[in-house]
Length: 305
Image (cartoon, rainbow, N blue to C red; front, side, top):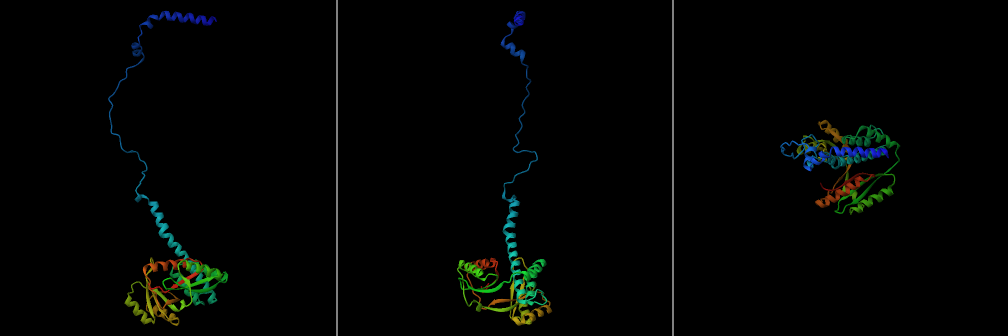
């Protein structure tokens, strides 16, 4: 209590001593005492930049700069289908090797003419050597399958021969019939009469004109010669001959300096069927669907190209 009273006495004394100073202060004077003058400088206006000048990564909105998109599109729509078709082709060759080993009774190409012809066809299509050897070894250990040839007729009157290698003929027959019905085709008897079994010798056709190819065919004893120009592959010549003349024709071509690639037995149409553009597209769609079926080895047609 004594401390509070002492504080009051001291406060009263201070107020009495400085009362004159408090009375002389006005609001204007208080502001002048407690504030300092501020020195102002003229503001220099500069143009505001429309973009940043510091190094930053730019974002391009133009489709031409989507390099990753274009690259993937090329791989997906160009290289992807080619790789898939190449894989299916190698799978078909492996099945043909199984057939050749089964029919020839030997896995040695030197003692099996059919197997030697298939191996040549594999090399012609750049099938890896390791894949060829694996297919030959696998043919000895694989399950015994049966080979069949189905005869079919297309909606426009063209004929088809479908080579099948399967271990369940009932299943394969039902699947092939379903694919044919889906494309307005059907199995039929008598389609084989539209084809002839002939020998075919394939040779390189670079630098060989049509006249020269005909002269070569006459000289070696071939019945006909066909020019083949497949996409992304070198042009080739197909010399068609009789079954007994196949070896002779190939030997004669080699003696004349023509490099042969392969020789095989094929079904050659003797009555080609001409189709319109729409009918061709529908026929090729059916043939592609049949070739995609795992049990189908090869599809022959008599469509006039």
